[in-house]
Image (cartoon, rainbow, N blue to C red; front, side, top):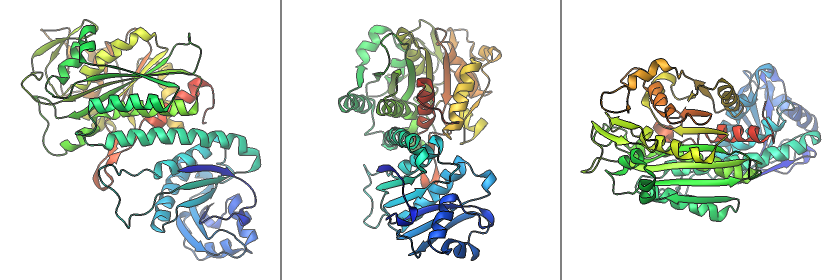
Length: 495
């Protein structure tokens, strides 16, 4: 989809649909007021009919006098004082769905004058880009399916054009990263295997000249001593892969930011097998790895002046004759031993070796993403991702980036009090800590492998996909990661 910044006289803008914001009590945004004046009060007359009295909803009108646009869509934004980026993007999402129903593939949004800064433009453009995604690889669209948006223009005042152009470029890059993460997550497990992920990473390096990819196979991982990661893949016929993607946008001696993702392309639970109901959703257990792919693509396309490494630990977790058994003890790359009390707590086993592996890069910071625990969903629901770190400054940085990107997190404790729940008589630690505070003890487990660098963990089990009629991958936390990388690079910051 094409995103473009435009200016000029809105009344003369030739577009299949001009989208204008209005507020409660018949108040108009500045662009809506300008179009209203050019049409001899046609918008005022429409508002007086009462359809948008509450300031919410949509009103579609055709052939307004003096207006070149074929349609004008009035977008209710509620109370002017309460309108913000979140209000705009939520209403815009509804509007874009409406346009699809009317088979409109091109539209022009005139942003309200208090939302036409870098952050507002980027949020609106990204919403449009995300709305242009549709999964089609194993289910082609029906002949009468609503068309996808092909071109989305944003009108801003001339003084805002420079920042708006940069915002659109960033939105295009982030949108591409979100779409890739969603596509990888939505693919079925018989297609999206660890080998498939490795091949996609290699292909990305071919497509994006600034990205390089290295893939470690099981022999290479065994030589390094990744006993925890390799124990998970033993029950599957699909070999595990450790995928490393590198982008160098800064000086060679600048310490890299490292992203680590859980890439469980399917998780049946192993010997501790999951219930059959909704097990199909375990194809999404690689969403953390998918978000690493997405963030790498976004950073490269934005050309951020940072050094970035993405590591994806990819495996399947299936029951089999060679699979982990409850009570088995494995030795991790760090040399610490782990008693496996539940084979369905496998994500931390592949992540712990990946987190030890990245020490060699002397990272400035490491952030891992994983659909790690159902306990996080019980604690926080489906709205924020769970954030765990002992670094208060890093926690504030990630939280602020999440708020700015509308991809929020909520910090949960990572206190030493919880560490004793991982005690066992037969190894340095157990891989589970009991029913109490399951998300916390999972993070505590990972913390034992991250002493060498600043680190934070995101549990995205509740945010990586949605259930029900709209079932599918969300692409989170690619927006958060992208915002964090933008801020770290010093290129721009959304307030």
